[in-house]
Each structure stands twice: as C-alpha cells, then as structure tokens.
Length: 133
Image (cartoon, rainbow, N blue to C red):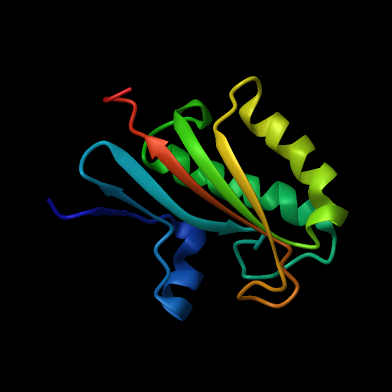
C-alpha cells in the first residue's frame, strides 16, 4: 500500500522550499505527522516563545483535521525544544489546552537548534485513524 500524503495550504511554502510533507497515512491504521513548527503561514517566525508554541499546536491541529481526525486520536507525540527548561512550562500549558484530559504518550527532547533560525519548538505526532480506533 502506498502512503497517502497529507498537505495543507498553510504548509505550501515549506513544501516548495524544502520538499516538506506535513504528514502521511500509512498502512491504513496510522497517520504520521511531521514536525510542526511555530511558523506563520507567510513563513515568519515570532520572537515571542508563547506565540511560537501556540502556533505550533495550531499547525498540528490543522494537519489532524485534514486527516480527518481529532486531538483525541493522537496516540504519541515527540517534541523537540531549543531551551527546553526555559520554555517547558509554556509547552505544558499549551499541551493541556490542546489535548484537554487526553494524554498521548509524550517524549520531550532538548536540542541545540531547529532547521529555521529562531524556532524553539517542533511537534511530531502519530495518530490512530478514527475508523480503526
């Protein structure tokens, strides 16, 4: 079975610049969402950590809805942090807003940099497709 690529208009600039695909449905059971960043649709990056973190979760939500699925279908997330300890409380707050009482498996990894200068967070996710759940 060939994977089905998930694309949205929001990610068009990144696809064209980096051949970036925000997600794929594989084997009919799972969708794998590439790292979602706190990048605005025009490609700009805010200097404000809270704004970036909120935008990263909003971008994740856009891909989840395109599947179509919901945050409650997410079974695993991996987050990559520049300045992990500094920004972690903001990420936890936004994660709780995003998932509510749903708690997917979560690994948080501190790193030195991301692919675009100034970014502080990347969120990767695995979604169990609703038709299988």
